[in-house]
Length: 165
Image (cartoon, rainbow, N blue to C red):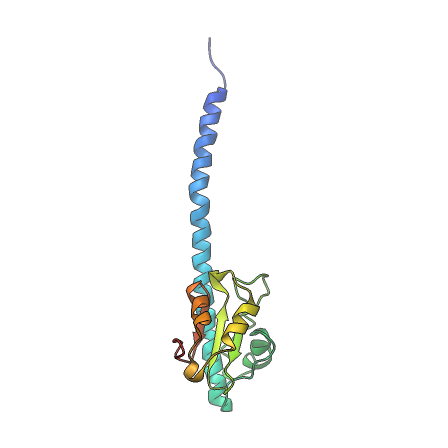
């Protein structure tokens, strides 16, 4: 007697092997996507930082904080600058929505700034703004800010970025 088709056992074995392969592949792909977002955020933050420094060279001061994020900063100031360094509004790949912006904070004495992404920290923008508002003289950070960076927040600054004494 000739057999046609597969037995249930053969089909179950194939499905089990496929499930194992998918279980191995999906986390690796997610990890690669997260690493790509980290690289993108670092690159865009450096671009915004370059534009902020260029703004200072042309105007004698850093841009004022405009709202709670970088969107108004890039949209109203940096895009219109010559030379144009920022090609358009840049969004944080780790934001709560696809239109979540990078944050920008400037010290009270307006000599130091922090531009950042939420990164893999899992924190909210409000948490970052509250902590980085406490930026000290010389652009140093309070311990809470260093804890956010250690948790995965990505920042660039013109300050020391070290712990305030």
